Image 1 (cartoon, helix red, strand yellow):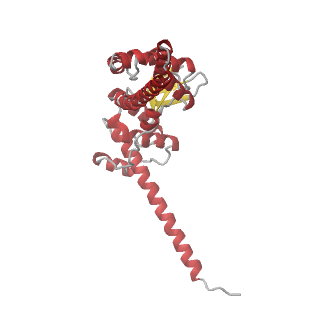
Image 2 (image 1 turned 120 degrees about the vertical axis):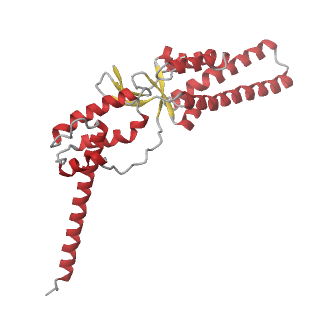
Image 3 (image 1 turned 135 degrees about the vertical axis):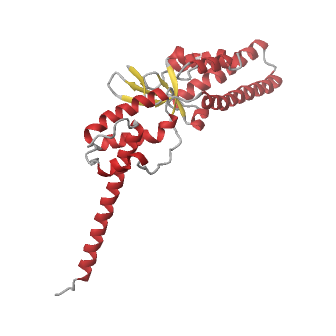
Length: 278
């Protein structure tokens, strides 16, 4: 399995053993912290509720101290280990907190986490989250480029962001210094897949890691140049060139669409104007 960064330090392009490309965005520490707080509150509620029920039962049944200690241990394991493990297995890598925040635990190769991996994460959480008030988890998440805590590193897992804020589409515009070139350039041979890649890249440039942004723009320019004639003026900024190409192509497509619609309206009007004769 190979891994390459595609859109910054928080985005991973994973190639599985079956040669399937997975584009994953790892969850930030802030999102994971809110998710952990929700799950932590539920775990404490399970533990406190169990202790209260045990105390009420012990007061009425006069239970042996050893039995009470064993019951407390069982409830602690249920809250701290049972809840996260069962949640990840039953909800396919999610928990209540992750459902709220739109995240999920997966293996490093993008597959679903197994029982062993969920168990390792839960046991390590008792050390790095509960025993140290989250200090170890915070340190590991800040250092690791995928924002993984120690439990993730040992288990071979990571937390990905499934729900993302939709980026509002913006109408492309030809840069001023390329308007004369774009007006006379042939941009009609651009493949549909290439146009989709350019449209996906341009709105996200500000959120992209600078190095990845430079590599992606250069790659898109190399793919675009064979389909555009003439070439842009020397020294043209790659992103400006891509914006000009996609904007001019969109303008011409819209213009052709308006002309085609106008012709259909004219034909419809002519057909309605022809008198019907039996």
